[in-house]
Image (cartoon, rainbow over all chains, first blue to last red; front, side, top):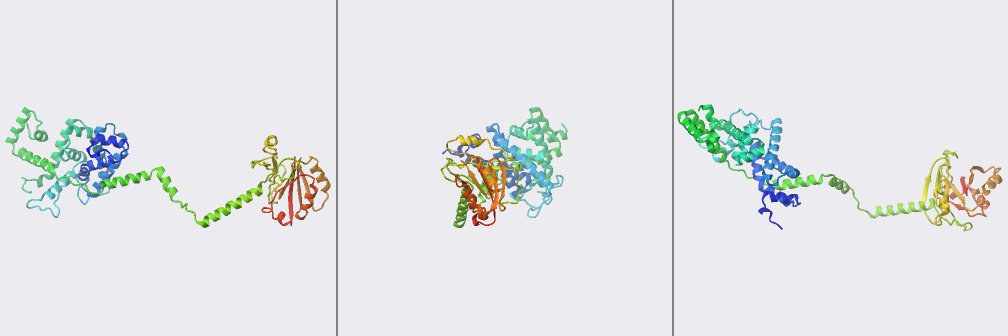
Amino acid sequence: MSQLDEYDNTELVRALRGGETRAFTELIRRHQGRIYNLAYNYVKDEEEAKDLTQDIFITAHRNLGSLREEHKFAAWLYQLALNHCRNRYKRLQRRGFFRSSSLDDPDSPLQLTSGETPEGELDRQDRDNLVRRGIAQLAAAEKEIILLRDIEGLSYDEISNILEIPLGTVKSKLNRARLALKGRLEKLLPGTGEF
Amino acid sequence: MDCSRISSLFSAGLDGDLDDLEQAAFKRHLAECGECQRQWHLFQATVEQLHGLEPLEPPLGIISGVQARLQEEEKSSPFYRLLAFWRRFDFSVTPATAAATLALALLLAVLAQNETFFADGTPGAGEKLAASPAVDHGSVRSPVAMSEMTMAVGGGSAMTMAAGGGSAPSSRDGFAAMATHPPAIRVPVLEHPDVLMVLPSAPPEVLPDLWRANADRASWRLEYLEQGLLLVDLPAAEFAELRRMLQPYPVAVAPVAALSPNFGRGKGKLRVAIRSR
């Protein structure tokens, strides 16, 4: 029996197409962390993120036939993931899901909630939480480009492929997204006197 | 370089994407403009925060959840739905069900035998040929609207239906010509006879003679429907007399006791269809 964990993505996709169902389990195992983080940072809700992650992999399994270039599995999976996240976010927004967490108002400044001390140093978890909330409040296009570049660490070329926009546009959009996030986090970042 | 231009270069400045000239202008402006310098620091801190985010551990159950949902999807495919639908039925057989089924099968077999029986078509063989019972006397009895059932006579068990106008099935001669299938007998169904008597080897004048000889009998009503077919309504008790009249010829009589109570009990009226060739 072949060792699937030694396969790269391309080999796993080929194995899956050849009827090796365990290859898909290996693909999920390999990518679930990234996809879950992407989903969580998009909607900022654990249950929704878990459900989204499962939906994304099920869609991937269902639509594997539309993946023409096997070596682009990761980029294809990110595309699927972003589409799912976008749709889910819109649906949740329509239902007023984010009203309590003020994610549906992109202009509202971040509010410190109980457990996050305005005075003194925030611990890492609280700080991460604030940053994630800041990301979640961004407009979809800004959010996506920050998630892909600054959280997932993808190259500009990969982002250009995934979002299907020119390289220059990726860079300019990323700059605008970072500036928008800076505006949201401004009061909470070190050196501002309020952090 | 003005302040609005500087912020658009923040990412490029961070990534080292600025060329030498831009880099120099960028640095010069930051050194001269306190607000832009502050914004630049904030920008750097923002990106640092982003890069420093601890990745979240995915919750347990994603793989098993996906596998379970894929299996569900598979099960909901038309084939699996059909299989599931089929599995809903309980095909286990209890002794009572088996006994009832067996009894029903036996009953059907007996009834089927009553419906058709066979005899050698050879004249003088003296064996029964074929018969068809029917019990409803109240139905329309038009000779024109007669339906006929063609029954194979002999060792085979073929039975066909032909309807309308009393037209003879074309297979009649064909059957007669076949060595293993003696002549087919056309049975008038809509006339609803209780008993059918078939005279496969009697001469054609037998029925007209029988009709003439008994036309005046008060208790009998004879109707010569067509050539080779005589319908006799008579008391069941006198059926034996009719049999005696036809004694010289091999006669097939339907064992219709199960379906014709009058024939079985020998009481009431009987309708007898007599068919000759």
